Length: 110
Image 1 (spheres, rainbow, N blue to C red):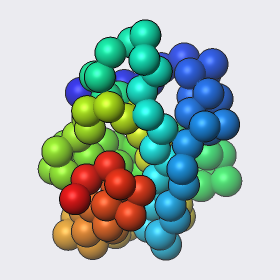
Image 2 (image 1 turned 30 degrees about the vertical axis):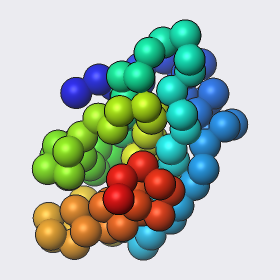
Image 3 (image 1 turned 180 degrees about the vertical axis):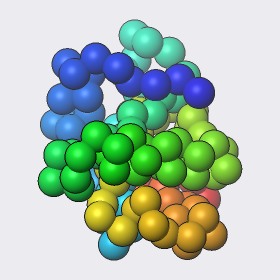
Image 4 (image 1 turned 30 degrees about the horizontal axis):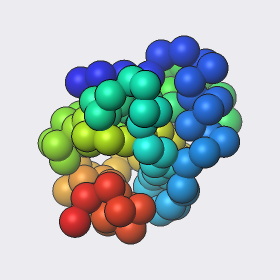
């Protein structure tokens, strides 16, 4: 799965992306830049408000697995998945459903 690693690219997606929020997850989706090709990438974000490093890392692992189960990288889009407090304790089915709904709402998937 291709990931967005540089803070410059993450900031760019934050500026240009369409956003969709759910109690379990926030999804930001931006078209991939033309010069880079159609390969999609994903970034997993867990802010310090969530808790200590253990909590943030667990939240990112849960998001990463949900993205894999939902078909993870989406061609033509750079996606930011932002954890919320309920993310790490959410059942897999609920998180996958929330992610799929938000991606469809943003026009990434059908």
